[in-house]
Length: 627
Image (cartoon, rainbow, N blue to C red; front, side, top):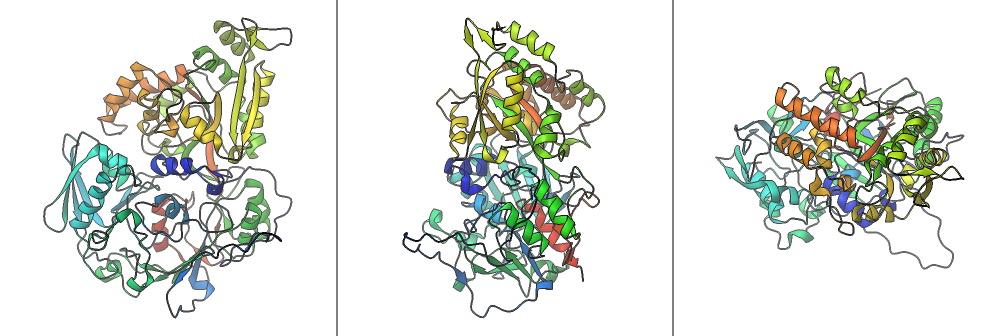
């Protein structure tokens, strides 16, 4: 989430990450100190780009609004930004939450309109039932029985039933790969059987102990929203259905908010007069009467909007920008109040991905030598102002309470991969058949080793530091920064040497990330990988067998067999190092407590803080006016 702006990504990367990423990838830009914060957009009007003097006037973007929009005072209005900076809101005109998950995810517009069956607090592992009261799974992990909550209604007063669950999941199964999560459903979902209106029996093609938690009770943005069968099934061309029609009240969800205005500048959701949760006594109405989604053009503009109380919550700030902003507005509260580490983890690590399918990184000894040339503490200190933590294993802080302790930590530490050691660089390079030439550069058969390091602009703090460290260790390394998004297609197709990237998925148990090292992702060079986190093209048959066994078991740290498999897989990863984990990705998201209090933070981690994750919706019921 550095300056990972969706507008700067290739279309294929947007699609790929929407399909597979577990954590929101766009956000926090390069962490350079902010000497001063520039003027910003207002809470309801995006900054306009300078008009060209010779170009024709651009076509005005369409806008949608109900008649007689009511006035709501600022102190009763919650103002948010999407998980990116830019000049306009992307995807505001398409509310098809199955086909357009990426855009609506980052806008956050589906929170409050659509609701989930359940939500998982990734900080604690606690599951909060919502549209569903409970679920059970059989011993073979092939059948999930879900009990839906009685009294749930869509915004048009129609009952929410098993028919809606069946329609949604089977629609995804049958529309692969057109919709987000559709390929997943095609692989795993056999069918859904309704046993009355409130019992949904989800039958799988093969055992999957993680199916419900990862897709229907998720705490991140891969949560699958259930759509109303009585509306969606009537659409003639479902892929063209934008689910936006103010006259018909679309979009229609089960949540307490309704869309009343949508444009490139802002989205407005107003609290409905009635909502099933309040009617049944499940929850009180959320306190905000209006939610406004706006956008800031840049990190500096976002910082100024936080300073002047024009926004309450949204995209992350650069560390330096946050420090400048909180000095002017002490009401800003990040996840950790006292620095230098302010931000929350998102289940991702900063990594240097090797292309294991070609020289020099097909040689394990070169990968190991590269590891000992890297000083992770310098990446944290120089690139991120000390605002993150070095890391060496492919697991995030979300696993710390359940897994990153005791014997498992000792397994990781026993490999000593976290140190910088020129002697070990020499040892492993010599094992790989390299010697140093007169220029003290590593070469083999008279040819210097050549490494081009691709660096996306949103990971700009890392690329130059890693490149310089490799140069100092005798590698002929060249950084190749990229602002076009070309790096993504190169990575997917295997046409790269090494790429600075993030590796996400480390959320519930170690298998989430370790599965990305399965050789099924290792397509031939030139054939795009279906998993961007598996683009390293690493192959290890022994690890494949372990991962196949892990997939059949629930990921709990009380199962001795599973623990043994986790330790074996982790040892293979640390022994082979198919990529280098450098540091954990953290994000400084300031909660502005000027108008609203009750935001999640390290002292009260009732949900993860990311506005693009689905469980942030639960914050709407925790927030209270600050005045």
